[in-house]
Length: 316
Image (cartoon, rainbow, N blue to C red; front, side):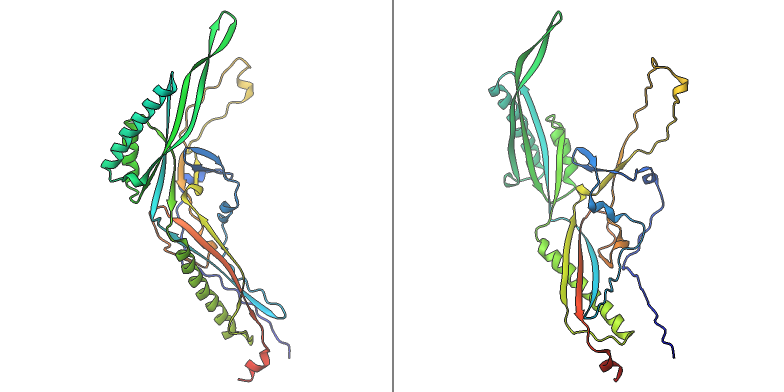
């Protein structure tokens, strides 16, 4: 009698998410990431998750002595607090005048922050640079560089818990001609607690996969396994923003103009959006639905179990 060997593969996830195609379709494949007030190319490994297939592979990797089960879990979690950094710069003829002017603006901004409930212990002014300013004076065909004064730059670092305060702080800062929001950091007070939550979910998934194999085969595995590898990854919001330009424009062929013709293009606004990790890449997503921009922490783990003799199980 010939024995047929049937291989069964099951791919399942606790959350399936889809969306209608909107203007995000204009986003280039080699997209950019928005961080603070700067835009830079995102050729980074953490953006490789945007593949279109499912990535929550069961990772059944048997050999002569061990059987390995993999689990990928992710959690969307809200931060415990935030840290905003506002950049301030001031120019003046002398250092003393420059210092007086920038401190006066910062003190008024701090007064506005206190009215929003920000305490002194949650504020810090970081001195960044003090530099000379130079400019040129034109006399006939000669341009002579001369000293024009000094510039001082400082950063105001603010800790707060309510994200709704961001706009109010922006308005208060603008009243003192402070327009540079350097960045906003998301803070987790106890990341180890979140890691333990991911570990518990991963162990449950490994247990389910192991049970499925034992219930549907003659395989015998050891009761307890060994951790083959464990990898945590955290994606903060400032690393997950992308940009696109939703506009159609015509093309001008070189045959229609000569070297003396200038092409003036219209300004096209860039749009930035938060692009979360693909839930299809995980066996389970904890807190899968959230409208607030989250911190995304994930765990990729593999457990191996030693293989026993299948004859013992078949006699039962």
